[in-house]
Length: 27
Image (cartoon, rainbow, N blue to C red; front, side, top):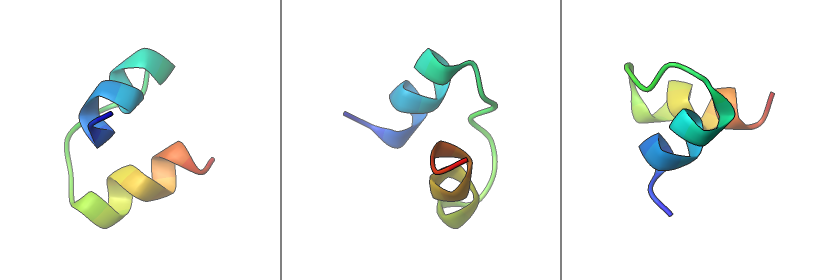
């Protein structure tokens, strides 16, 4: 799935650099 889709599913913000998005998913 797309990073942004995963972030939305987790209730996390989807704005920012790709590295930041990946870091959020790993929290």
